[in-house]
Length: 146
Image 1 (tube, one colour):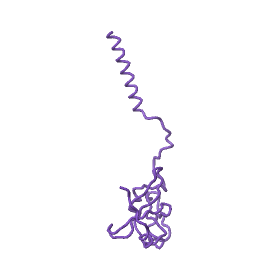
Image 2 (cartoon, one colour; image 1 turned 90 degrees about the vertical axis):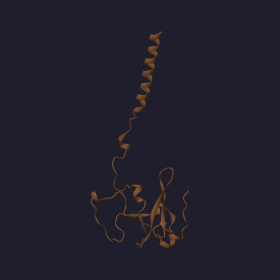
Image 3 (cartoon, helix red, strand yellow; image 1 turned 180 degrees about the horizontal axis):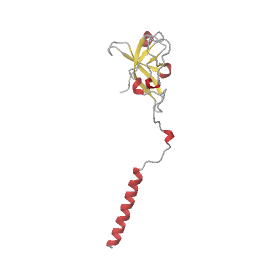
Image 4 (cartoon, one colour; image 1 turned 30 degrees about the vertical axis):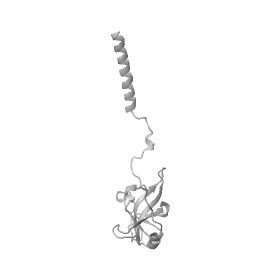
């Protein structure tokens, strides 16, 4: 009887450790699906927050306070802080993300500067929006859900 209980205990231990072993090994995946390095044209979203926004006349009209993302991961809008001084009196306006154009060149420069690959950043220098500061100030304020 003792031998039978001991055999059951050993089999149970083997089954439990086998299940634990199976849980610690992740399934094999194709390595071609993983990004291993940031590429040109890819930006870190954290670097877009705070980015200055200029209009087409090279006047600063605000800065990006937040990005609004849908449940599929698509960026729908950039919330731009408009007006005010040092955050006081500023109000947020949600602009469709596709309306923003991105510039790698510093605002106010003309022509193209050549950056080497080592000098490329993982974010643009600024965004350009085809609206005046007055149009943005008159736009409806965006309210964040709490």
